[in-house]
Length: 197
Image (spheres, rainbow, N blue to C red):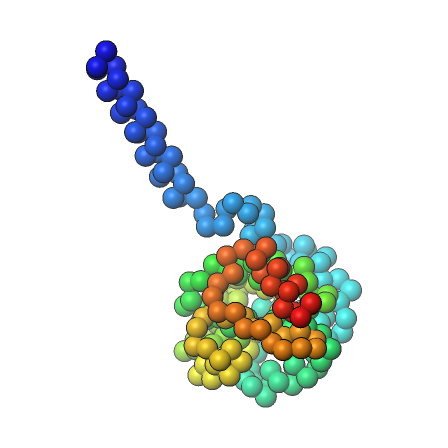
């Protein structure tokens, strides 16, 4: 009887260990399923169809890394007057930036007919690194190259990465430091700080 109890105990422990190993091997964000899955180009195009001119101009530069720094970004923001804007500061070497990319890809496409999304590649020493990042993690909007990090610091008042600035059409900007772990969390903040501020 004691041998049988020992065998059952060992089997139970082995099962617990196997379950624990399986859970740790799950991909990050898997609990939200398709919410964090990357969109296809066709899905993105369908979501963005019919965007107003200033927003369509952003979509036409999807995943491009633009030059011009502060003056170019400020000219773009002036052209977007009257639209809510979400600016995401990232860098190619930033692991949390990579991890939140699916959330930004999905939410920028879902809200792209009402909200302008823009990226800032802040403190990548080589432009090619930022361009490679955008090829690996495509989004429906362009980013501005900010080698020195001064533009990102000016907009977010922070050296933290990632950082996101929500600028409502009328009202005060809201700055959030840190990664968006899910599209659901990013959606809530777009609604709260960009659309209903």
